[in-house]
Amino acid sequence: MNRCRMCLARCITLLAMLCASSAWSHEFKLDAVMNAFVKVGPTQADLVIRAPLYLFKSVKFPVKGPEIDVPGSSAATQRAVGAIEQSVTIFEDGLPLRASAATARLSLPSDKSFRDYLQAVDHVAEPVDADTGIYIDQGYVDAHIVYPIHSPGAVFKIRTTAAPELGDYLKLSVRYLPLTGDTTAMMLTSTSGTVALNPTWLDAASGFIILGMAHILTGFDHLLFLLCLVIPLRGWRQILAIVTTFTLAHSLTLLGSAFHLAPTGAWFPPFVEMMIAASIVYMALDNIVGADVRRRVVVTGLFGLIHGFGFSYGLQENLQFAGKHLLVSLFSFNIGIELGQVLVLAVMLPALALVRRYVLPGKAGMIILSALVAHTAWHWMTERADVLWRYDWPRIDRDNLVTFAVWIVALVAAGAAIRYYGKRWRIGDNARGAATLASGD
Image (cartoon, rainbow, N blue to C red):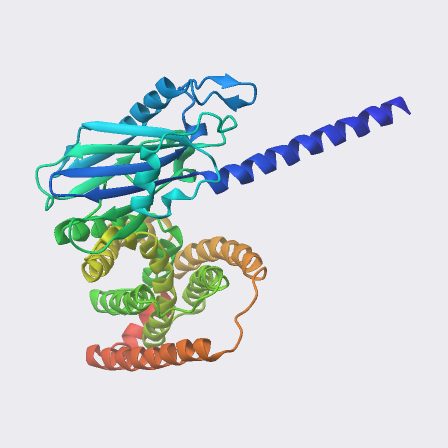
């Protein structure tokens, strides 16, 4: 009996610890944001920033019981400002700015002053009441830091290195107020690197080209689909036709999604991820049973539309860094994807030729290679399907019907373009080309 009681007590203690841990984790995630304004004037840039107290572990605030000793915290608050200056850096034309003045104060977690720039500035300038009760690690450090600048027309950038051990969990929400023009907003983390607040078109283009290349080079499902496309192909005409069709198709949905023409709802991203895995399974099985060139061009175009939605998710998360150059960023991202695709094919095609010649020759080799890919993609598909079934399917309303109609028209237009393209290049017209695909020789 005593042993049972001891086990029960341990279970209750463990459950309490887990609940406490979950509650703390939930609270941390809700509060893991630093809010900031960057305002550029004729001769100075102002950074007004709010950071949670728990970030300043190296700054020892004086305490009285469970609360911070607010009247005795002036020195600690200034040390916290110094930590902010070290971890959040503003650049003018590539050079880090040096602060000429800084003021700061402590604030309650319930304070709402950072909804507006002027309100935040006025709030930081006000001294905190001596009798304010701020519990340890549950308030904010609010700071106003002034930087002299040479020109308001310079390129300004920002970088945060605050709490790098937290990675993407800690975010810096920045609202940029230029001397002229509209306010822009963006969300950074310590992994974002140095980000332009007012990027030039060249900054936007180069940044999004690199982003597009990185997206496809790290997208293993896209790479496997590309591998399945070219496994049975022979000759530059077939490869060019299939790869170009895939490029045109995913470019269409990528650009359409950027202009908010994609279906909305929590169900759609997991649906796209499941369909991408299904496209790999289909292509791998098609390789095994023997593919027809003309059919493959059409199917590649259809699946390319799905992959374009997948590419768009990597784009949407970063369009905040485009500034005024939305179209430049869109096309640059797409160019980056195509450049990455060319690099992949430049490595993949010679390696595939060596494998087919020395490791897995003939049709049997193509079947084995495709079966391995199908096995991997099948597991991805079932795992993603399990995630999809947890979401509610969309309701049939006017907005969804309009979106559906738009994409039906796009599909018809894409199909007509693919058909015309196939005839123009005479893809699949000769028996030898079809036989080559089917035999794998």
